[in-house]
Amino acid sequence: MSENTVYCLMQKNVMSIIDHKKRDAQKVEQMFSGIGPRYDLLNHVLSLGLDIGWRKKVARETGGMNCQSILDVCTGTGDMALELSRFWKGKAHIEGLDFSRELLERARKKTRESNLESAITFREGNVEMLPYPHEQFDAVTIAFGLRNIKNRLKALKEFYRVAKPESCFVCLEFSQPGNTFFSAVYSLYLMKLVPLVAQLFGSDPAAYRYLGDTIKDFPSPSDLANLITSAGWKAVSYETLAGGIVTIHKGIKSGG
Ligand SMILES: C[S@@+](CC[C@H](N)C(=O)[O-])C[C@H]1O[C@@H](n2cnc3c(N)ncnc32)[C@H](O)[C@@H]1O
Image 1 (cartoon, rainbow, N blue to C red):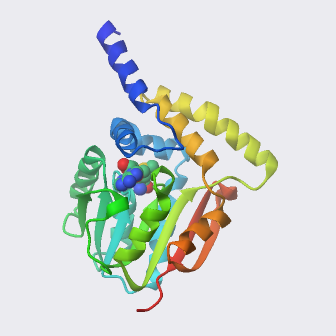
Image 2: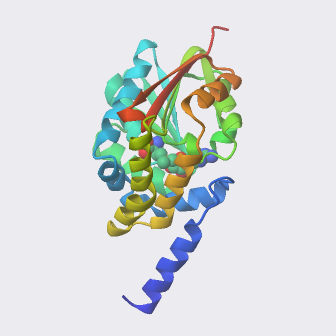
């Protein structure tokens, strides 16, 4: 490894050290753009492929609605948007939004390769200030995005603003296992093994330490349900999966 390569790696890691409590938007965007090349692979490796089924479940959760347009926020490399498009078989148009141009390019490439270009549009933007008029979407989804948002309440209110009356909101996010023993093992896995595996796969271990920090600091499912409710969503419910490693929250926007 040349001296220049070592310097570049050090620069990359220094860029990735983020205060997970502040979640500065520019730093979060840079971090996600930096881990783009290995992002999908590490998602599948670190979750043992379970992430695929979790996103499929989110897509099914939108099935109770008569959806013509769905917004997937924090869409990243587009896996949730692609899953929604497969579920709705072209009957609903999917809009994916993220502030990482790098990840959106990857999302567009995957969409072309899956021949779903006409069903999905990707747009660059910040979820705290969505570039859409009021009441435009029949459903809003977010997978593993909420933890990373600086002002979560503001974002949840934005999702509510752009959702039509009678629409739904579905949020997939990491949570902490309820069982004390499992929780301790999972904590070791998150804080020690995950950054190591990330490094072995050529990604940035600091970004994966940030993942562990944000999961540990994230509100409990019941606190998150309260936050979603305080943004305006009604009948907020949640379901924990995989022993509590992830939770799906769902809310509806009452009729206008
Ligand atoms: C962990 S990734 C999740 C990506 C994808 N939804 C998935 O299921 O793999 C979080 C994404 O949120 C995006 N993000 C975080 N804060 C954001 C914000 N304020 N506005 C737009 N995108 C944001 C990041 O760029 C990143 O792509």
